[in-house]
Amino acid sequence: AQRVTQPEKLLSVFKGAPVELKCNYSYSGSPELFWYVQYSRQRLQLLLRHISRESIKGFTADLNKGETSFHLKKPFAQEEDSAMYYCALSGVYNTDKLIFGTGTRLQVFP
Amino acid sequence: DAGVTQSPTHLIKTRGQQVTLRCSPKSGHDTVSWYQQALGQGPQFIFQYYEEEERQRGNFPDRFSGHQFPNYSSELNVNALLLGDSALYLCASRDRWQGLAGTRDTQYFGPGTRLTVL
Image 1 (tube, each protein chain N blue to C red):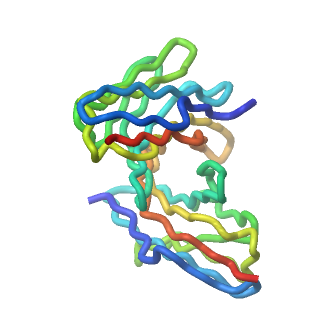
Image 2: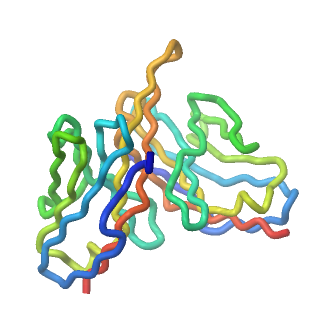
């Protein structure tokens, strides 16, 4: 079965604390993994994808095929990071059909 | 460019009715996908349209149908509405980038249409 699991509905941290949003997946084949973010009153937007191996707004995510995980990390959280974060996957050769997790709301307190 | 636009923003229907939602893709995008996002859930893929044809479909009944027009805009139709169809319906258009490192597809989402079925 193709599935994305985000075990935490809510993650609350103080500004400057490290953040790790967990994502585990199940997929038969070669997946492409993504993190999408939705800030308050804004539309869903791509944050980063594993293939690009980039850091966006200080966030990074490493694909661990052995543990089937794609956790999102940031060493020092900022208040503006408060948002809803969705982990998603697609097939490497079919990136049009995204499978999303249920999302984690990140709250960063001052 | 306003990006992906959707109309209407909100809609209230009663059980058994039919509804049509509309989407205009981002300028230059020719592929449109529709997602359903129930409260507290992540978006679920309904189907995708390219060249005016349905190319892929998720696990949704035939009550959900769509259309793509020559200008790439799209409609989502839902017949015989059920209470469980109440959700945010998202449209996404695809940007395809091809470079030396390969092809990169990025989905750009619209703001959604909130459908309430009473």
